View 1: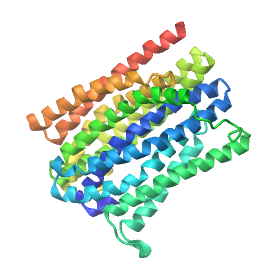
View 2: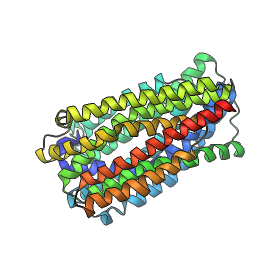
View 3: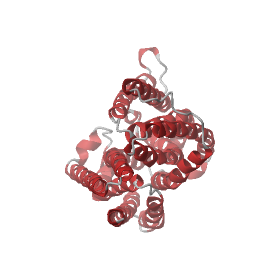
View 4: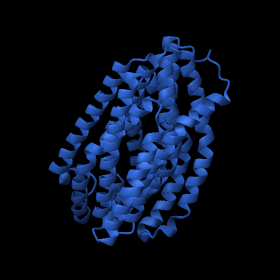
Length: 411
């Protein structure tokens, strides 16, 4: 929808969204510690423990919301120093400032989602996401373009639509948690709601490595987007459109990785090496298979995919080149996403963090900057650097999973 506002509109929303998520993803990562804690408790049949971890997760989400809001606002105030195209900068700052209001509901949604997935209630999560996208479409239609008497707010309307849809997701999952507990007589209200500092420390200890890992992974794309913002708005628009497509395909292995984390966590709780091994390898095979198909689609029909966003010939020309690069890292992006999940099922959130730091920041970004600016490859060079980093991370994490499952089976 924002594509109808022109390349500067897409670029501004892209800059604002990536800036927002690059900070807030730290809080999302902190809540990933719920995956192994709730899953292992569920695998061992400790339902009361599952409820207590949910309460601690909600508290942690609420505590994180304020500092993350302040940090994100601080980053927004520095946009004039990024050297962005003036048209993009003029639209990006107001957009990002308004999206700040969605931080608390997004973190609460994350806590609710981790809990539901870990107790194998994934249909409500899918329902929340599908319907939230419909809510987002309707809110964009009303607020971006000013239909049915609503004001025409353009890019800022897209920001408010995002806030509405994120609040909707949090409320949807809260209602589903209460409905599920009433349906199965799960004892949610009978569980102790006393906050234990030892539990909170354990949740933070697991989430703390995962938070930098996600921040490093998303942060490198934020930096690349900022660098792409130095080019013409049509180049930034092409970058943002292809990044959108790559992010959509990555959602599948990310979801498979989350399922793998739950199944591996259940197997660890049962002390079932065969179950852990089958769950992990099945998840990796599914992720690799889907991303291979996505790569074929990117190569076979790039112009058809880009046509859904914008018809600008300059945007399409650059987008075709970027989709070709994106096709080459799809497999490894999927493998690293799933491998991160299955390792998290073991309670290992530190290893993915270290390799994301090495792959993206010590290899991918420097190589991309060298190719993009030093050798004059432009935005394509930036994407080639990202590809090299993802190939390294995916290869190493799958290898480490192999060693981990062998050690667990031999224990």
